[in-house]
Image (cartoon, rainbow, N blue to C red; front, side, top):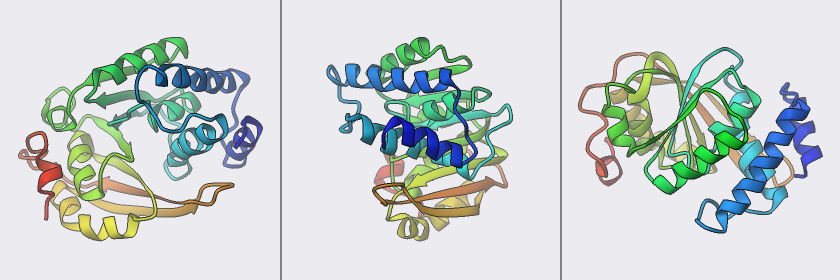
Length: 238
């Protein structure tokens, strides 16, 4: 997907980009490649693949969730900033918090936000399990999202505790989405969310399958979740 195709594909989805936003994506790509030479941020570094598999794929969350209002969004384990930074570029109204366990990645994100002149973004160096138990962040966000972090049964425990009641948990998944959903039913119920919507689609050009699950939080998450670091992954809620 070249830059023109990227701009056109988003326009067709009702997300027109200004010249300033286009130049922000160009600079994002440049910084991603530069930093990737010093540390492992992504295995994908050619422009067409970054625009499709990182930028467009990240923004696909907005095809199924209204992000046009002033909302607080938390991205758990964002790595190089996906999906929240592409979403923030498209929707400057978002107040974005990214939590990541690796300080090197936080350093990259700080420079990225500065160079892209992004306002209302903050980066928290923490394990997701500790973040979810921190009173500063627990049940504080309108939207919590994550992409390619863990299976849904694990991901829910890392994300849902940070979500306000009536907020939305947006889980971005690949081809194994249906199996993950079956596996995660008890975890989702325990944590207090219900499935509101499921959207399956193919990425343009290469046609790989994607699923976006949108969950709504109906009750407070029990205080014991998330459990200690490593526990959700080792023994998912069954």
